[in-house]
Image 1 (cartoon, rainbow, N blue to C red):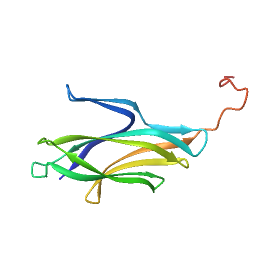
Image 2 (cartoon, rainbow, N blue to C red; image 1 turned 90 degrees about the horizontal axis):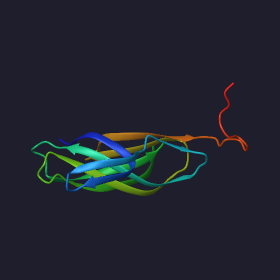
Image 3 (cartoon, rainbow, N blue to C red; image 1 turned 90 degrees about the vertical axis):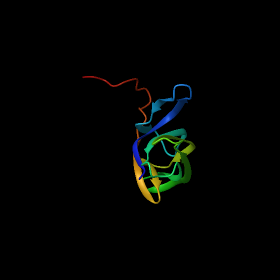
Length: 138
């Protein structure tokens, strides 16, 4: 059985081949904008997937992106474990357009079953009035 230990969304993920380590750069915890639609130029998903010894070494998974429950994108992902019981799955997504505030959801599935979900809140932040420099304290 495949399981996902954890998943993150970030602006960038770098894998160091010599040391077999990953660096997560600019973790995406929320998206805040002053207007919609808003373009997110790049999102990198990183999933740590584990398998049982009886599971195949290579398998097809599916990743989906949704905003407020509506599909933005859905695509297959080939994951190879290279003889190990765990694998990092790094997926780059370019140019996501968000039309409204709500919840951006990334899911990783296998055989139609969702293994993991990463949710990010999308917020509308009203721009400061013209002439406003900062918050006043009274």
